[in-house]
Image (cartoon, rainbow over the protein chains, first blue to last red):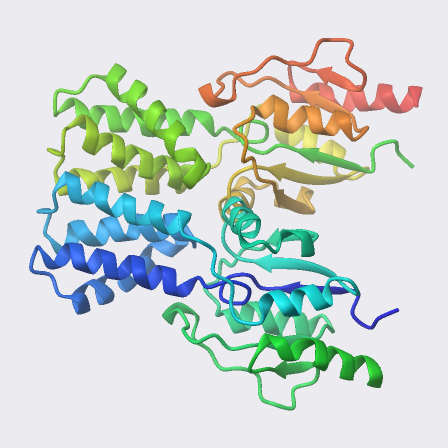
Length: 217
Length: 217
């Protein structure tokens, strides 16, 4: 018997690094466009604008990001980008999709401690096939029973989409801040003292927190 | 009380037209590349090859298709495609994603007849956000309780992925052939006489079939 039958984890930047792969890809785009006299700052600014405009129609994820990179490249070079460089942008995306899955610190130890006592699942945005591929390559597949992809059509932040609905449903929510946050997702955490909301510095503190809550519950 | 508590529908080319939108988009690409002296036949053949190679890394759906269209355009023009025409390919994709959802014949009458007695859901490949958008725009939203996206990482056909697993689980499967089938998905239907497998010419025959099965069951 446990207070927590089911523990659902976010995946990107909770179990494995994700945002820094996007940053690497974006740096690759900036390096490529530098040869056309376009500054890194222009690339970052224009890409963010294009993504914001495209997100309604293309949604989230690396493929959407790649389409926005291509649009950005054409617009910032005023159509001068070569066909070979368009292919090079597609290759940046393929490289990112094939990149090794790098786990965050403490993930393996924490997940393997929790798996025998709780049913673990992933609830994530993004694309199912991509997330399943990452789970398979992460080495964590044996610990997780399901992956569920949920949509986010409102551009609400990760905090708003991951934390607040769980609290509203009467569930417990634990937030472990990541070192980088995508600009579209920046938001304030709930105030400390919010019922059933906890913020931890490291994922390794999770089994201890659950033990405490179960002792009280 | 009913034998069928839950009826799950495929969505694309079962509830609404999909393949013909891809065909229109592909025709748009061919029109564009004709100005570079590339034939429609070359476009069709090369795009199919590129898609087949990219599907492992990019998966299914319109965004993957668009990335493959761009790659095809660069390769077939040997890099001569202009930046403006790359943007025109992105616009073809945006037009497809914003195209009106056109229901197949008999869908509204069939679904509205079944909804009061059965729980209806959609199980589909593709992307959740895109499918949710289409459901919202289709006018069928009130009849369906859930949309579930499943992955297809093995490039197996629609028949194999939609029909056979359901039969293996002991469920009933009904196949209503669509007028066009994507070349990646062509496959043989199970033999007639396969237990719990039925093939119908029109979706409107479904309530009758269910009535018959319930009278027997």
